[in-house]
Image (cartoon, rainbow, N blue to C red; front, side):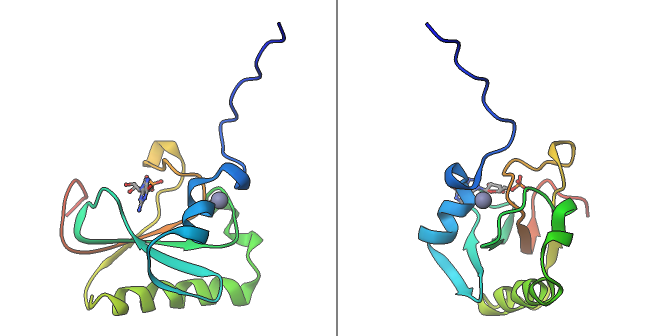
Length: 120
Ligand code: 5GP
Ligand code: ZN
């Protein structure tokens, strides 16, 4: 029997959770190649995830985005917060497993209200 190959450390886009949620998730805001969804395990009263359609594994690869798309992504983060009524909030990106990243498709956490397990 052939040996099974080891699982890849990082998901490829076709089996990537956030590529799937980009296509079929419950979006609170969507448009222009970006979506915002509510985090399944919220660490704040309001906890959104902003997910770009473009699959890069981490924030380290943010340079793979065309400049205009990067600007749009930041605007979309702000719009998503506004969409759910947040005036004051935090924007967090976990970069790499050592910083708590668990899904290897770049995403932005938008955290409003009381947060849990995050620095004051
Ligand atoms: P990370 O730890 O990579 O920075 O963030 C991944 C986030 O995705 C976590 O906060 C986790 O709760 C959230 N998450 C994991 N699986 C799902 C899911 O199936 N649906 C949603 N909405 N969020 C998820
Ligand atoms: Zn992906």
